[in-house]
Amino acid sequence: MIYLISKELFTKRKKNLIFASDLDDESTKTTKMNTKHFPKDSMTENRTNVTDSTQKVSIVLFDEKRHRDAYKDLNVQWISDLFTVEESDEKVLNHPEKITENGGYIFMAEYEGKPVGTCSLVKTADPKYDFEVAKFAVDNTIRGKGIGKMLMDACIEKAHEKDGKRIFLETNHLLKAAIHLYERFGFIRIPLKHAGHERTDILMEKTIA
Image (cartoon, rainbow, N blue to C red; front, side, top):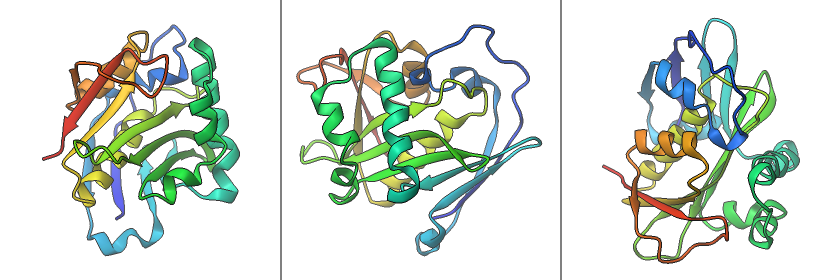
């Protein structure tokens, strides 16, 4: 599936730096996006072209040769800013094929050809959920381009394309801007009964229409 998305460049950005895990909160408030969906068979190019007056951002499917190092680096960057990179993180970051070879997808955001963000849609064995949204990161040196929103758009569209009914994610209360983004996409908080990471203290889910 190819998505052509045009958006207005935001008019104002935060003065204070925020962590990579904060995922462009300011841009989610100030951008407008118009999306046209194409037939599923058109997924052959595996990319999303996003343009505005000054830059080109592409959301593409993970490529082992081009993205392996960036996938790990981007996630280690945001995790280590606030938390500790856990063994469970290392297992996935060192072996991203565990996601892609088991019915999941990894999306990469490229800005001027350079990987600057990523988000994974992980197939889950939990009968209550079809996918988990995980390993969501945006380079903390590039802000205000709506990259976090674009990545989440791609994940939700893919889950819908694969007939997913419900998805979930884990997060932490310190990631306020990220939580705000999730809520804007319709995720709601639910009781935390189990977690895949020690840093997790919030569990959220979304029903896909």
